[in-house]
Amino acid sequence: MKKTLILLILIISILSASGQNYDNRKYWSDEEITLDDFKGNPIEYSPFVSELQYFIGYEYKTDKVKDMKYSRFVTYTYIDRSISWIKSEGKNEITLLYNQTILNLAELYSRKLENKLNCLELVKGQENSLAHQYFSSIFDQCNKTINQFKGETNYGIKDSLVLRWHQKSIDDLRTTKRIDIPDYEEKNNSWGMDIGLGYGFLTGEISNYLNNHIDFLQYGFMYSHKKYSYDLRAILGAHTAKQSFDNNKYSLAADTGNLVAFIEASAGYQLYKNDRVSIYPFVGFGIFQLSRSDKSNDNETIEGPIKLQPNIGLNFDYKIKSASISSRQRTDLILKTRITYEPINYTGDLKGGTWNLTIGIGGVFQSIRFLEK
Image (cartoon, rainbow, N blue to C red; front, top):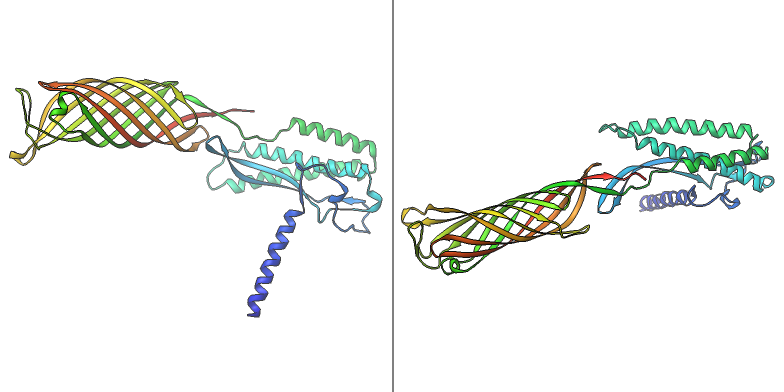
C-alpha cells in the first residue's frame, strides 16, 4: 500500500513539474519581455547583470485548409522564465531591450529554420534525421550571432550598439516571414468513379406489361473540365412481367423475370457548386436492352433487341469528406444521386419511359494548386 501511495505521489509530482515547465514558457509571439519574466535566482558571482534562457523547437504539424489536411514543419521560439534572471542593478529599459534583442535573434533563426525545413525533399524514413541536421546547423548559427551581439555590446553595456542591433533585428524579422497556411485553388480537370444501387419507375404503355425495376448494380466514370462534366455509366436491373406480350421481334411471358441493361453517355453543365454540393443537369444517349428468362428451357436468358435512346437528368453530388493524396491532389469521398429520364420506343406496344433514381458512393480526384502568400 505504501509503495502504491509513493508511486502515485511521484507521478503527480512529475506531471505537476511538467505543467510548471510549460507555464514558465513565454513565446516570442506572446508579447515583449518584461521584468516579471525574469523569475530565476540571479547568480551573484556572475559578471553579467542578466541571463535569458532561450530555446528554439520544431514539430511536424497538420492543419485544416478548407476541407482537407495540410501538413508542414512549424518552428517556435520561447524563453524559460523560471531560469532567466536579472540582478537589481540591471532592472532598466536598456537591459530589457538587450534581452529582447536576444529573443528577436532567436526568433529570426527559428523562422529561417521553418523555411528551410519546408523546402526539404523528404525521403520516407529519413524525415527526423534530416530535420534534426538542419535544426542543429541553424541553431549553431543562431548561437554564434547572439554571442557576436553580446560581445559587440559588451553584454548590454554599450547602449548605442544595443539600440542598433535591436533595430536591425526588427528589420530582419519584417523581411523573414513565417510560412502561413496557404489556401488552394482547384485546377480545371477532375475525374472520378462510383458504384451504387437504383430504382426505375416505368411510364407509358411499357408499364402495362412490366413492373418497375430494381437496379442492383450501377457504376460510372466521370470526367469534368471547368464547369462541364462527362459521364459514362452502366446499369443492370431486373423486371418482372405483369402480363404476356407477343411481337414478331420480341415476346414476354407473364410472371417471368427479366433483365434490363443501360449503358449511358451524357454531358452536363454545372449549375451550382460550393464546398459540399455540386449540381448539374445533363443530356445524352443510352443503349437500352430488355431480356427475359425462358422458364421452359432452364431459365435460359433470351436477349431482346438493343435500342439507342436519349436521356436527360439531374446529378447531385454531396461531398462527405476530403483528404490529400499529395501536395497537388485531393480526393473527395462523395454521395452521388442521379435522376434520369429515358423515353423508350422499344418494340410494338412496349413504348413509354423510365425514371431512374440511382444512389451511389464514389471518389473524385481533384488536382489542386496551393497559393503562395
